[in-house]
Image (cartoon, rainbow, N blue to C red; front, side):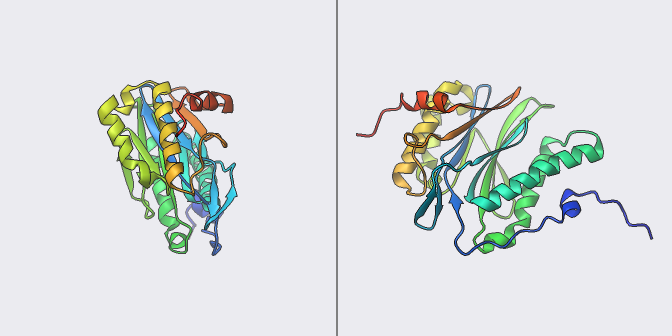
Amino acid sequence: MTKSPIQDFAELVGFQPAAVPSESIHGTTVMALRYDSGVLIIGDRRATMGNLIMYEGAEKIEVLDDETVVAISGAYARSLEVCRYLRHAFKYYERLNQFEISTEGKLMEISRALAGNLEMAMQGGVFLPIAAVYDKKKDVFGVYFFDTAGARFMGADFATTGSGSERIRGVFEYIARTKGAWSTRSKDDVLSDALMLLELASDMDSATGGIRRHTPVVADLTRTGVRRLTTDEVKAVVDQIPVRV
């Protein structure tokens, strides 16, 4: 009997969850917000282990391809491992089938990776991503968040996760009701409010880094691809945000 060819990247590489150390490093508050012509993905730089600050230069935004960006919170090392897997899985699919994987296929692959991580999540390896995507065929942007089992939910205009997100979640809706939907506003306006929210989260959550001493990472997803804002660009916006008295 002839064995069927391998159709799945996880089967090809034998992708298996690694054991999670009893004290693992975690990353915190990240967010994705629509604006009038794209999506901004923002993450603080702090990584913690228990009550210890381990690192203030963590990279919590991963570009999977030109139309897909993931912001990660939770078990930091495991998050990076899964993002690397997803990046290669997308490419493998395209080479195997000779056409690009659809937006729905990408989101299903993220859900599948999270579902496969459930055993590790029960051991402390929890990570919760946010996915910002651009669907070229439909010409629409989407912001999605997930639970630990891989269930997917679509945010209207924004999504946030991480320990600091619980302190500011309601403020996103308040701003939308008072200033208008995030997706109808300019990039500069949305970025300013987003950075202020991240600073508020850092004031109330010790695991979230601020915006002044260690500049957050910001990625801009548009119809032409993904661009990371420079440190100077982000600092210019931060300098316009009033300092807490």
